[in-house]
Image (cartoon, rainbow, N blue to C red; front, side, top):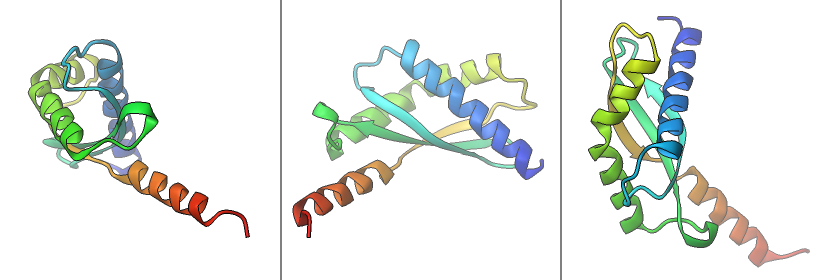
Amino acid sequence: MTTGRMRRVDEAIRQVIGDALAADLKDPRVGFVTVTDVKTSPDLRHARVYVSVLGEGARSSGEEQREETLAGLRSAHGYLQGRIARELALKRTPTLEFEYDDTTDRAMRVERLIDEIGPR
């Protein structure tokens, strides 16, 4: 598969999972989750789904909350994989693997440090 086609597949999977999380998934362990990226293997057997978890008051989530969210996503694996199979015409539906994306945490930490330094 070409790089451009893989990017389109990754984006389509990201959209399907994001829509399912926003509208259908009722697992209380899964709070405010954003699918930040998807990386699908060229043979479409696996897709690594990167998620960001926002904590209370738009703060960074704690380790326990992240682990609960990832557990909820893993338990919804079959449902989410079924949504992908129904909505996307792929020759095979990839197995989903969820990972926490700490990019948002790092950005919030940098903002805090900048605020602490204050104007010069």
